[in-house]
Amino acid sequence: MSEENSQPQEEPLVKEKKSLKKYFVFGFFGLLIAFLAIPYAYTSNPKSCTLCHNMDKYYESWQKSSHTVAAKNCFDCHIEQGSVNLWVYRISFYREIYASIVGADLKPAGASVPGIDSCQRQGCHSLNRVSSASGDIKIDHRGHVTKADLSCIKCHPGAAHPNVGDIGNVVPARKMCKECHSARMNDCSFCHIKKHSETKGFVHE
Ligand code: HEC
Ligand code: HEC
Ligand code: HEC
Ligand code: HEC
Ligand code: HEC
Image 1 (cartoon, rainbow, N blue to C red):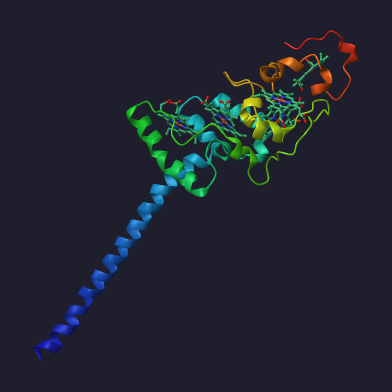
Image 2: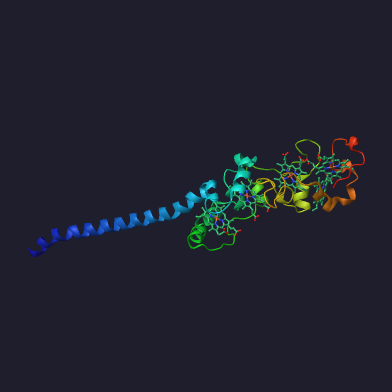
């Protein structure tokens, strides 16, 4: 008889344990979501990069560049492609939050200078480009990237931030062609499609 009595007494205890477990699971996922949401919020809004340190000139130059539409966030270019890399970057953003609290210095981590992969990903640039928009300059992109082993950035450093700090222009400076083609600099038609007869005697800097 005593057994029958004790059974209904035990049930609420089991229920309580179950709901405690539920709270625990909810609590855990709540914390996990908050843990991911904080760096997610910071790293998803390019404007937030200007909050703690002076990135204004990078932000503004990118806003004015033709890359605002194609590359909607800084990490479209500055992080190696792939969702794993993106989440590693997002979580390691806690370093910056921590550093801004304690006032520490940081070496750049995660954020990298854009490589060819970044420019060539799906829907962006092809290597088959062989002339300039003006139609004047012959420029075999595939040959220069694969045979001369030049990255896009070497010729177009200012793709997103033209002339900010030490960063160069969007289009290559002519003198960089000279590094490899010094012997051909007087052979105008080596690089130019249009006749530059009016510029007789012209010498590239
Ligand atoms: C919560 C404040 C905070 C925000 C927001 C923030 N940073 Fe930082 N970041 C820091 C601190 C603090 C440092 C270390 C001190 C420093 O180098 O100025 C740092 C350092 C860096 C560095 C290394 C600088 C160097 O050359 O040593 C890079 C690159 C960087 N941040 C990029 C970004 C980008 C991109 C964003 C936008 C997604 C961003 N930061 C947003 C606080 C922040
Ligand atoms: C279209 C691609 C692209 C986008 C989008 C972009 N950048 Fe850049 N960024 C570059 C390139 C290219 C360089 C120059 C690399 C070089 O020549 O050293 C650069 C350089 C930088 C540098 C200097 C790095 C160094 O080591 O000197 C900072 C800082 C920077 N970008 C911040 C940002 C921030 C912040 C954003 C978003 C507001 C952003 N970038 C968006 C392509 C991009
Ligand atoms: C050897 C230097 C060199 C390399 C490397 C190079 N380019 Fe170019 N690119 C040029 C030249 C020169 C032009 C013509 C610029 C002009 O219109 O005066 C050009 C033009 C362009 C244009 C057209 C720009 C416009 O406004 O008409 C795009 C886009 C471009 N390149 C993308 C790339 C990409 C992406 C890469 C890397 C895969 C790359 N380039 C590598 C030299 C280079
Ligand atoms: C790092 C060295 C290097 C630089 C810098 C360089 N080139 Fe070249 N260029 C090469 C090499 C290597 C070849 C041969 C590629 C091949 O065989 O396809 C070449 C070939 C060429 C050709 C001939 C392509 C053909 O179809 O025969 C032209 C035109 C040319 N480059 C223009 C330029 C211009 C314009 C610039 C500056 C914006 C430039 N190059 C910068 C290394 C360079
Ligand atoms: C190795 C490649 C190469 C050779 C050889 C070359 N150029 Fe150029 N030239 C370029 C590039 C790259 C530009 C820059 C295009 C741009 O800014 O859009 C340029 C620009 C120019 C411009 C425009 C200058 C300006 O400030 O707008 C003229 C004019 C010119 N070249 C004339 C010549 C003449 C004349 C020769 C022969 C004596 C010659 N080039 C030989 C690569 C070359």
